Length: 536
Image (cartoon, rainbow, N blue to C red; front, side, top):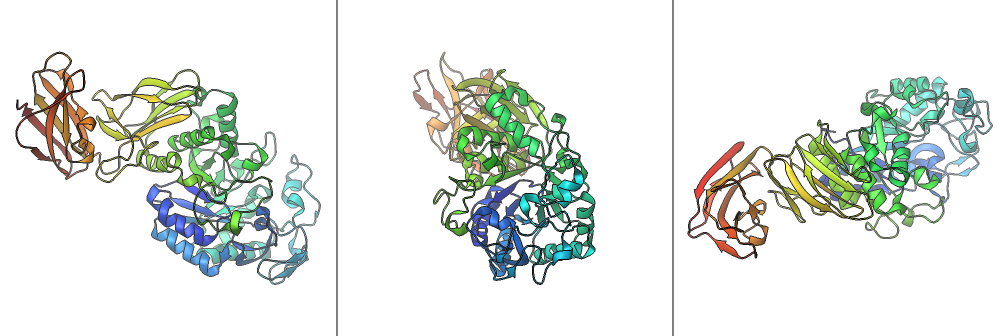
């Protein structure tokens, strides 16, 4: 989606709540996709997994009707966010009853959709993951297993996907894809109106099993469960220093066909990955995921639960984040601001890797970004070597970048040598990146100023990047070319600004230069070079 490859999965959110999230958060923060829970009619009951037992392919589940679904797609598109629908197409129900849309059904008989002949003949629970046929034709958790080799079933599923497509859906998560032969999924995709639509398939890796995730890459992307499993292991019982080179070289799917994630609704419940109960360990794992080069990240946003079966609070209505048990992981500053980081560093590799040999790491993304992650029990102070251009950078872990180059939190000064020094607290991170559109121009300040020992020269000005006339936020100049003091600063192209120089002595006392405010304008691209002389 225009280079935006991060998905937010809003698990069991009602569609009208998803629409609000697209407008308020997902679009502005730069998410490329939102994945929504299954929209089709399903069995009744409060548990989350009732959504995964289809009764028909009408949009008539607990999360909203056809109109609210369509309105959600439109709102997300208007916010620049594409929509992925979770498509449950391997099976129907485990029992009999009446669906959420009023359809009466019995197992193997779903009026208007399927009857007995449309299901595999095994009719027993899956019992042997070493047997491909058993896994793909028997019943997952006792759910009626569709005969996905049948032309009628393939066509019916394709029509369902096309119906969602007619409402504007951009892509599909194929639930339980491991339990459908890859060739049968290919046949279904070929029968759809848009066989080039984005697909991501749920295929859980099992060591030594005959069915491997790599079989499915011809149909689209595949969820890489090993990424989440390994991140839990490294963050809880290994060293972050060992994450150098993390990615496809660890035996994973190729990066371009993998969806990477820290957790999802199944893994947060079965303990195979980290989850929201792990506090800042969970946050830092998501920060690392987004800063890394591997895969297309999926940020999971669910709700707190006491029992594994607990369904969504308020039937899926999110009145506000952080209320009623809604975690809103996608909106946490430390995570949401790394989406902008990832978008800005797209196309770059990992550079300037640093670690303390233990649980503190840092690395750059080319000349676009730099992140430091401290999973130690105490703070670390370090001078980091980056590939960043000299300038002032917003630490997006602790503040939000502002239009025009400001920041609502702390900033760091990267010198002409590409270095900056930071103290990173325990369980915390620092992330800097070149704001899109701000790296094309700048100002080079040079002032001839004679100083006494212990005195340093600073520049301050009327724009946020120059401290907004606050001497405490004035930017230090380098004395490397003394008596000329220098600073290179990136600014948005076309920025007109006023500025003055000041001196600070060892005690912090400030002396302003005399005269009127100086003025300059950063060009649309390139640098404005300012050669000034201190006015006593």
